[in-house]
Length: 195
Ligand SMILES: Cc1cc2nc3c(=O)[nH]c(=O)nc-3n(C[C@H](O)[C@H](O)[C@H](O)COP(=O)(O)OP(=O)(O)OC[C@H]3O[C@@H](n4cnc5c(N)ncnc54)[C@H](O)[C@@H]3O)c2cc1C
Image (cartoon, rainbow, N blue to C red; front, side, top):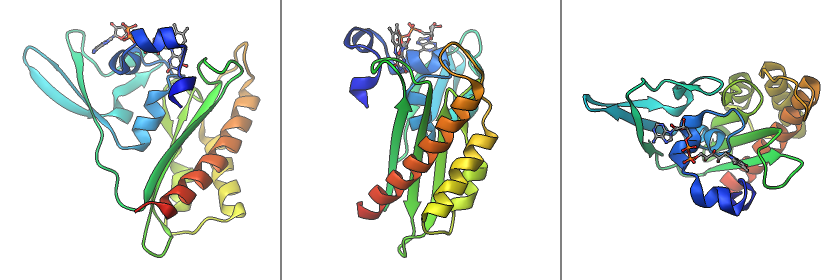
């Protein structure tokens, strides 16, 4: 994914903290970090606090940072066994932000059923958002095409995209549907082969 996050020049100048604090709904790192259960440590001269990343985003370009606070750390927990996280964005220019992006993480029970699933959508609403209804469908189940299709539809129904010069709202929902299906399937397959 790294080679598709902006251009070499932008990657060399930009920081991941700046990317997250900027709170652009199309930023690449946020959906991935949300599915990994990341938190951010923020603080000012008076002290620090930890905020789950998904609660850090308040609105488009708006975060939970107070005026005098800095983002100090990004904390990513160790993933559980039999788990995987994947990400894909759909864009027209390979080094640009995604028209829509989907990250998915899946952790499995020993029998291959889903223990936990997280799906985070990029540029499908004002902030990076979880597709919780789609996630809920997966828990305790094994994947098949019908389940993946159902999860894709739920994610598309539950998102909140806007239309712009790149894509209509309807097209973004279609992309969320397709990418959710694809990402959940890929995460499930990779989790099954991880230790
Ligand atoms: C041509 C181009 C292509 C791009 N393509 C992509 C892409 O494909 N995917 C993608 O995700 N992004 C993309 N971006 C966005 C880019 O990744 C971000 O702009 C960049 O990561 C910001 O990082 P920075 O360190 O330069 O932050 P800055 O621009 O310096 O800061 C951004 C904002 O965050 C604040 N800020 C910075 N650091 C902190 C901190 N530690 N605590 C609190 N506030 C802070 C700043 O005050 C500012 O308001 C692209 C940008 C350009 C110009």
